[in-house]
Length: 454
Image (cartoon, rainbow, N blue to C red; front, top):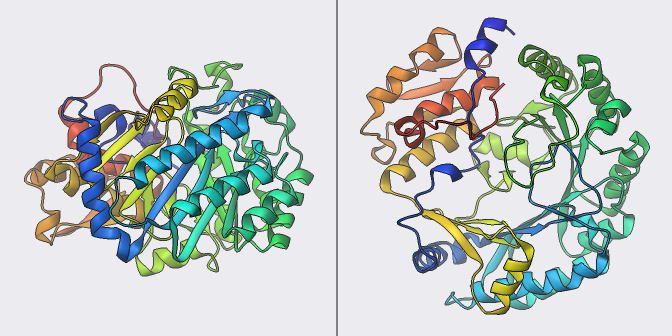
């Protein structure tokens, strides 16, 4: 990878799990009442046809990982489990009360935090209570994030019996010096056992998360981690850049210095070598940072064009409504976003009062909806088109003008009504999305809001 390209395109930019991105949400036009109206409209349009998705944030961890930027609470007190789950169930009841029909749930994802902080019996309680309030859609996709050190066979079997068919383990790196720096020590044998147990329990997709650009991480470290990962042949691999955002309140990115991180050039080498190893092992690049075997549903979804990206990451199918339950969760009605409060005590108090615990959100304008389609196309398919009226941008000439440099560097191809990201340009897909982000272009931040793109 050319150092000049790295220097040129290593800028702060969003990962585009949504458009508009959270810092550019219009708080003034948003209200909980408008969120409810938007959600009810979307639910009526889509529930019968496709169902809805649930993202459930389970924020507790027993120890702090110092690479983590997620919302979490560190505790070894497991008495917090049931009160928190009861709040989540009460929140779901508040949403169900808004709907004219019983929700049909297509997708559930348990994220965190550490979902396997919770006992298998308590997770079973949660899922059973959910389906007292909702029905199952056809061909459900239920998944959870597992910590290799504490995901037991009992966790796996219990959730699988409830319909869960996919698990993703956070591996990050197998080298002890890096693990110590990020406070995430987990031997290969733990990951191997967790992976084998998932397959034994009947899971059809097992994923591993690997991060490059971690403190003290060398190119050899990345090679070693990927080689060991390939031994286990997970169905999916998320191979992504460490997002260094220590200024965000509440994250765990402490315990090392900026100079302990690899340079941008070394990070790009880590990516290039890692990508080559994954290619040689039969993994296909699926959107930004994600790889899958051809036998996995994510690859198949890419081939038929149903792949989708939202706050739950890449998905092999899409529902118009995604409700986020739990502290800090984000919901998406397609026409609007809403985020829950970030403090657990405040969250539980609001739910107990019978109030949706939403504290901010955004109502998408017609322009937002058009741009959102473009960015989703780029992030999921590495291409977009404006031949259809609904994908036409009034400011498209200005957008195309700002893409000229990307085309000169052979990162994209621009045709009469289409943009294609080249193989060379795929590592820079976030940069390709930036010109389409009119909210950011019109109001560029004075301070850094996002992690670096390289």
